[in-house]
Image (cartoon, rainbow, N blue to C red; front, side, top):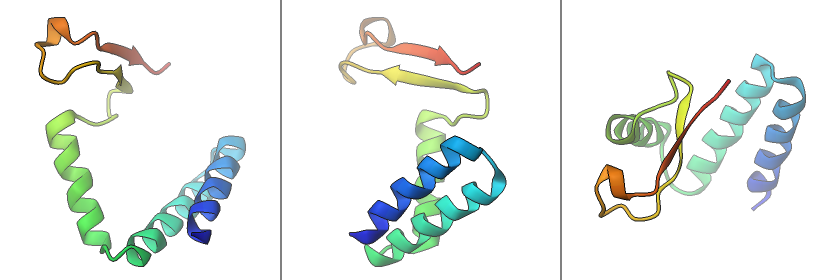
Length: 85
């Protein structure tokens, strides 16, 4: 799909410039991909909120690097947290 290529292009531009305009371009392409795949923007936002509630978000600039087995306890997962600097 051409929109997938466009998304990569816009993300690459954001990686260089890191500005609000490039972030808006990424969102615009994501919205286009949603529509092309039969999803609404409301469905995308609902899924984002659901995942944030279940797994957290990036407000504290900390993200989970990996999880080996989701059925193990936290001490057994082999997961690693990484704080963005």
